[in-house]
Amino acid sequence: MESQQKERNKAALLLYLILVIPFMIVTANTISKIEVFDIYWVKMLLQALILTFIIKAWLGIVLNHWDFQHYLEFEPKFWQNLGIGILYGLTSAMVVVLTEIITGGSTRAFNQELLGIGLFKVLGLAIIFFLAEAFIEEMVTRGFVLEQIVELGNTPLALLASSSVFVLVQFLWDNPGVSLIGWVNFFVLAFFLGLLYLTTFKKWLCIGFHAAWNLVFTCFFPVGHHHGGHFASYAHMENWLTTVVLVFLLGLTALVFKSHYQVYKEKLAKSQHTANH
Image (cartoon, rainbow, N blue to C red; front, side, top):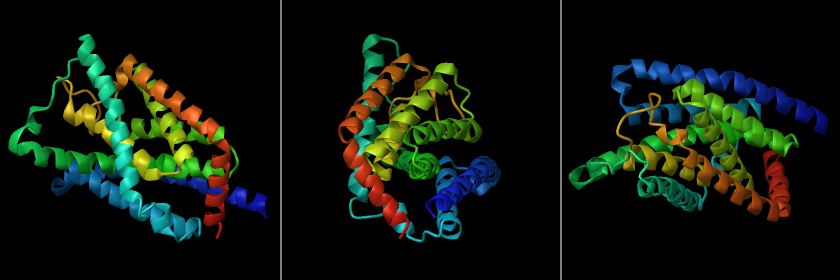
């Protein structure tokens, strides 16, 4: 019975990957062509809502798992987990920015639009945009691919596969056009977020980190010229300093994960029990 369930999970995972990648491309391009939706934050929010409905349908129809609210972790500590993730992401990104500025190797400057009456408008819309973007990417990769492969009993493969899917999503969805170091950093960031999720089992903590990380580099301290895809600037991903910070975060998270491995096993067993009942 367990073997049959694993085979069904494998088939569901493969079908999910086949369907979700076109979703990333088609929705991004289709929505951009509808003039009323061709506003950066509206476009991203709409894609997040569409993906939410897809996840809900997928859980119910394919996986026969109807506890949608639990899956998305809309629970009492939802805002707390999001807030901790945002604080963690802001701190980590600011280490990169301030080190760049101190060493004189930065073309960044504080975004003057955040001063005065434009603060709430610019920052508010940027927060909506990056939370929606992070929600989509986390739910596509950590929220499903990582979870499903972990449930198949292969944690290392889950981390590698979900990180690879994250890189593929970046390439197909936003086409940032970064150099090799940029793609390496995308993979390291994804691997770190995957391990962070396995250490905490908190989707919104990862979403908060992801959103805040992008917010700092694109909204708070943008580069002097735009360099990236149609969503955001990715100049920071082509920086060796970013690599150093991400590897440090990955190593720190790996140490915590290792020291709490037994807790991880217990959490995994509990989540599998919840998913199967």
